[in-house]
Image (cartoon, rainbow, N blue to C red; front, side):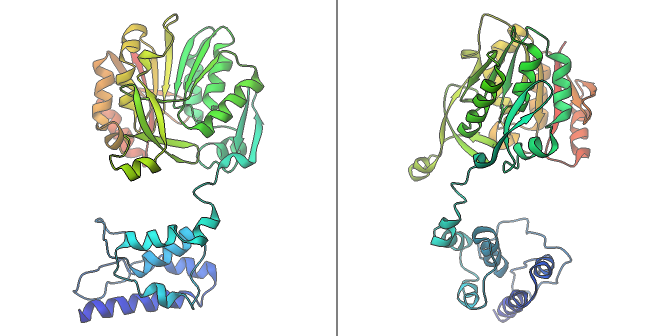
Length: 370
């Protein structure tokens, strides 16, 4: 106990000393806080960069409380209030966080109700226009500032989408690729845009109207294995769907959205020649709900591939997802940053190696029928 008390006192001294520093210097100092050994063996040795522990530790540290101020209240604690808050070191971290997110100061920041639609502008591209917001750090910011988005995937879609073709954009987001596809398939074609986020739907519909793209059919829903309900969680314009919570209190606080197996709702009167899937880990669920269409129409499939997200949403591994495509008679390629394709056929290990070397959370793949 004496060693633990000494450790905590040492850590509190470090945090208190931050108040006397300029903001930039304080931020730099925070990267060298002790790494958080809560054992009774003695004080932790400082590290050059703060490294979070591999296991979740329930006891709140001084750093936990300090960062609650920074992240949730948008400021550093002042010296007068710090002694009271720092006295809670060792309490359950969930109780600490709950105290911050239920306080008046956090509510007044409006973080839980903030929308990125306040700064929407119409961005002009050579063949279409798109409504986007610079505050949407997931997609819109790239569109407004960079005047492009996902250029590798856009280049691949441009090779395969032809005038008169029917295509599906599953996980359409704010619609950059939807509008691109609509310009490529022309008025004689069809683009079915599937998107669950209602904020994105408004921008999609606004862009569809300003372009006069009557060839776009927008479906406000998630795509999955079965028809039913899912819970939507959003981060800017990106959205992730999952099973509804079992707990009634959590259910009442959730954002339910309809979910459809796309075989049941895609038009049957014309073949789907191209499918783009970007559903934040639900890609296998989409494939299963689309299996009849895939077998009937044999579309080219362009898909985000994120092995880290697949287990939690689709309950499969990265190799499982690739194996599902191969089992349906497809060969796999990787879409490179410039839009070029590197073919791997049925070499699952080769694709996984590309993903591992990428150093990012996803790569883009293309599946073409044998």
